[in-house]
Length: 114
Image (cartoon, rainbow, N blue to C red; front, side, top):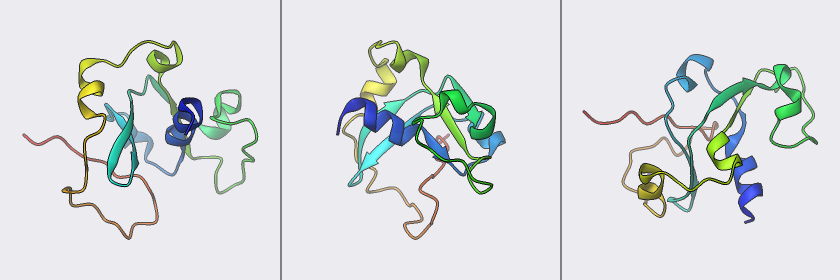
């Protein structure tokens, strides 16, 4: 998959909590249990409030989707390299994590272990 297409697919538009996303440090793009992309959100937006920044301009907002969220990763958009933590996660498997595989929302929040 083209890097730009992957970025736009991973960054939104998601049914997510505005409060919870404020604590998100990294967003992973996962394929077949492998982390294939890592982004560090610079900002989160509500779709109806930032139509010009939507991942794709062909997205049609409906009452069901207009309050969904998406992010931008300014570091990625500027073409800057991954930081040390982002590089660490690329290629790692999430197969061992206990995730709700039957959830309809493709978003899962993982909290760091203490």
